[in-house]
Image (cartoon, rainbow, N blue to C red; front, side, top):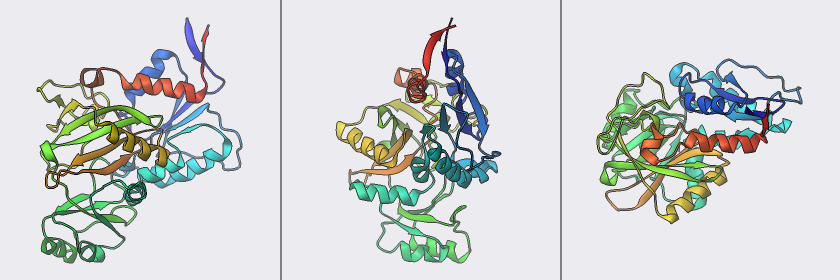
Amino acid sequence: MSTYTTDKPIAIFHEHPDWFRPLLNELDARGIGYERLNAAAHTYDPAEKEVPYSLFFNRTSPSAYLRNNENSIFYTLSLLAYLETTGVPVVNGYKAFQYETSKALQITLLEKLGLPYPKARIINHASQAVKASEGLRFPVVVKANIGGSGAGIVRYDSVEELAQAVAAAEVKLGIDHTALVQEYVVARGGHITRIETLGGKYLYGINVYTSGESFNLCPADICQTTNGKELSRNACALDAPKNGMRVEAYTPPQEVIDNIERIVQEAGIDVGGIEYMVDDRDGRIYYYDINALSNFVADAVNVIGFNPHARLVDFLEKKAQLKLQEV
């Protein structure tokens, strides 16, 4: 029989109990040793110079706070900084996770690269929201700097509505008390586009159709194709409620692919997804979300024609320098 051998297992560092089952199933099928580490209950010794893993795969989500695991978010940044001093290969390391946990940094990156994004201002106190909205096109959203799964985003249709929410202490900035005040984009065609990348390169694209009332566009939560076929949402929580979202495979123009590869390479993202949409009001593409965590689309073979988790494990094998041996 064939199996992959190494002196050390791959570390899978995460706090969500269900999201990564397809990844673990692929590792199991190949006989690759791994160890699951709980990002919400973990310890490390900064004086330890050797790490007992061939590779450290960071799967911490900024939405951890929605599961009462907010302690994992800032801890992970410190852990990743430590790991990168030990020489162990890290997938989605410190730089990538900084962008994953800061929409403000994402906007700064898009500005640096000269790429269009919905106009936004950054605030650290709700009292600044109305001032920050000056010159923006309403509706606007107040978007928590650390969100995830569409959390922490509220739409306001007028400056009066925003001012009333501020006066009523209803504007919440999230766990780091930082937020974006950003123009709300009406998506042309009723869909956003999410592009997944691996190793800094384009992997696949999907269009996600929503009602426009929900900001939770987790691709693994999608429950049907555009022709109504039900999907198996085995990449996300198994008890995730059906949310009516529809999906279809989509290949964007080469210019968009090039731009997205620039984003993930600059952000140090090994595996992640970029979301953009076409503004129905001016016909322009706007990039608006940079994700250093991908669950991949549900029932991927039926949607995009291949298993992205197989490609991901190929990438991990190479990164960990695993060797296939007969045993």
